[in-house]
Length: 469
Image 1 (cartoon, one colour):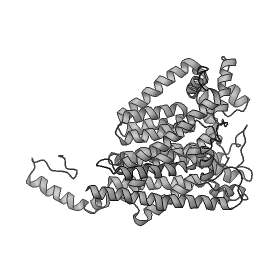
Image 2 (cartoon, rainbow, N blue to C red; image 1 turned 135 degrees about the vertical axis):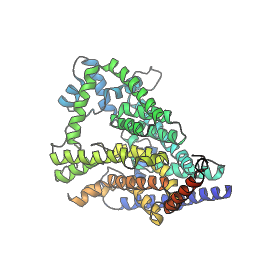
Image 3 (cartoon, rainbow, N blue to C red; image 1 turned 90 degrees about the vertical axis):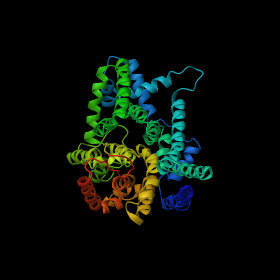
Image 4 (cartoon, rainbow, N blue to C red; image 1 turned 180 degrees about the vertical axis):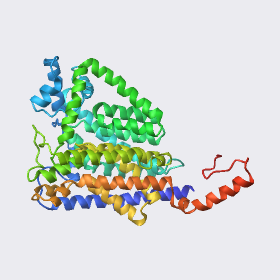
């Protein structure tokens, strides 16, 4: 038994080292061959910038957040979002509660590093923390019990860390000066907690994410439908505690007005090509040439097709995550958890590339499970590899192509890869919940159970897991 497990781990390392990693590097080389703009770089280029700390002066999140804190200090009685978002056209799109950690960091004593450097320093640690967690997630998902070879384990950790470093959305969060780096780390931590059956701690991590990204409040409904009360209770405790503190600090008015910001963004979205959502795809398709350019002070003109197309497709995604064959969660709880996390990210009208940093721990969890269950037979690994490359390797040259539906699709490669990967995850959840041999023998078991019930009505029967029913 032990030798079989060791052989399986060695096989996993061979696949990572001789198939996955070379394929990712080759994809980056191919992407870099043609003419390309300076942004976005390939995954290798993004990793190089990260290792050289080239994002230390970026403040994609920190700039608007610092402006919001300044407005609150200078005009405490005025509407924060009315002045900042609607009048000054500053794209501060976070809830007031998101300002609590920023305020704490910026008010550190003089002996500590403060301001942008401190915030980016935390992001740097968060990215490395996420990278470090991907290896244990993969090992835990593939070998939940039993002895492990120290050498094989170390090789797996190194290979997984390299692949996570080459996962562009993950490191891009730091390079932009984005608070999403913190959220990616919290989500990776939640995945590991879920795998180790510490659902209350997973709830704490998800609750902290919701403080900054309220779209993931859908996790509360997901947990309630599956009666994961420890998870739901911990998540709500964090939300209510931090929410109460935020209301005391910033007032009810600003919290209620944030709903108007969400409504405004939900009706328009963003056309800029890093918005990897159905909204971004529709905005680029229907907006014509120039719709994929960044507008720092505005949003796309309202388009009913874009708005309702986003509402319908996002609604279908959320309904599928919450209700589609949800009884499978019992046997495939971890896969069901990451399906929810990916779906709630994709369903948002604005899902920037760095938001998909959550895919790094999801791929780490899914890889050994796909290899073990092979829900699509021999096609499983090739399709999984295509999804990973599509999500981790940008196509810089696509931005230079003349406007056309094909160019728009190429610019949305991450979203397309995420959609296909989500479908694969649903298939994996079903394969774990109802293995193929079990499906083939359902009729025989039902017949045997019926005979057993007739002849021994008061004798408990052994079920397949070895327990008693």
